[in-house]
Length: 164
Image 1 (cartoon, rainbow, N blue to C red):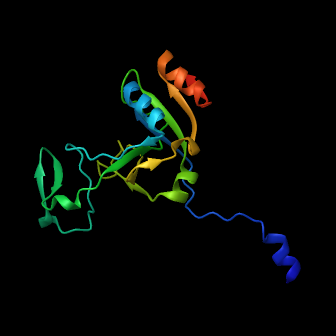
Image 2: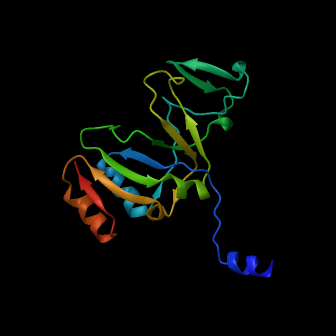
Image 3: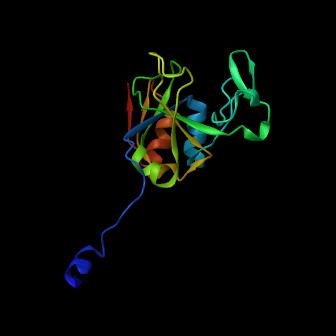
């Protein structure tokens, strides 16, 4: 027994679910702020408000196709990720490629489907709250167009990047 304890005493156990690669897409100006601050800042979007859908339907009202909680304290700020590496938001998109397994060790990752799992599913995942120390989770950054300002930030922080 003592040999077994000795053998495994330096084994580093980590908790968290196996998530795989996650992608966060944003604009160049947001990418610069993300790199400067070394964090993703959670937001709630008026056209895409998230809440706990275990609540009863009468706890919500419908505006422009969106479920809005009557109790604003139930609105949660979040960061959106996708599992779809081909998802691009804009023609000058900046895509952060992130280690979802590492993120899940410190943050709860929740699947989300704005469209109820229909065939156009975004493969979206969400983290409620800010993700700090982002450099621990970045695998690389993909730019859809050359951007010398962002490229300089990435070089300065020694972050791998590609231009598609």
